[in-house]
Length: 242
Image (tube, rainbow, N blue to C red; front, side, top):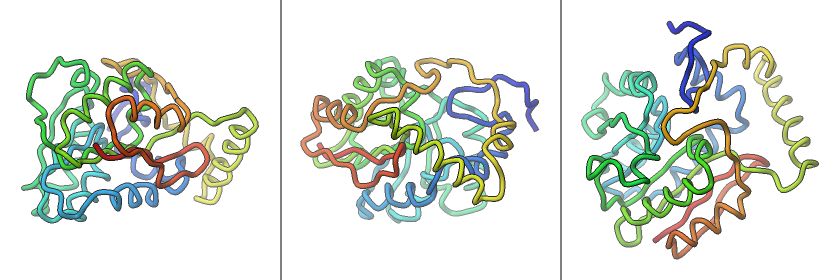
């Protein structure tokens, strides 16, 4: 159990990591639908997959089940998150097909990691992580991802996005509050368990960009086709193929 006053990395959200899987579902509308939709964008015939900012392993676990012949490399800079992700898989045969790397994907994007993560991935995914990078680093990361995908490979990211107007932002905040109430709690109650986040590596507090900006960045990074297969107000899945 972690001290509730403890400093946490951006993306860990809760001071006690054990609260993450429940708390994120109370704060983020349609969290499971979002992850399931992202996974559906990945070919089940994939052999090599990369999960950036794997957190507690929810997305990696779905990938392993969706792609029975795939090996997954899961990257996160939080040792607490990786420990929890490993605990979900250690009693299953799925653990034989996943490699965890404790690292900052911003450092990977900046060319500071050599070949530790690998290359020639059929697909790359991320969820609720990349929005902690500056726009400049997002662009670098998208370029790095594109360069490390195999021909025809894809990248899909599920992340918060900046609303196109303050009016839409207000509506979204109201919808989120109602979502949390429908889960049997309130945002105030859930947020009381949130830790004190400090910048870590290339990540800091939320640095949101609009959906249009993300798609433009992906095109600039060399993605031949970019798309937005799912959106719920301030949440979106976006990516494409190289």
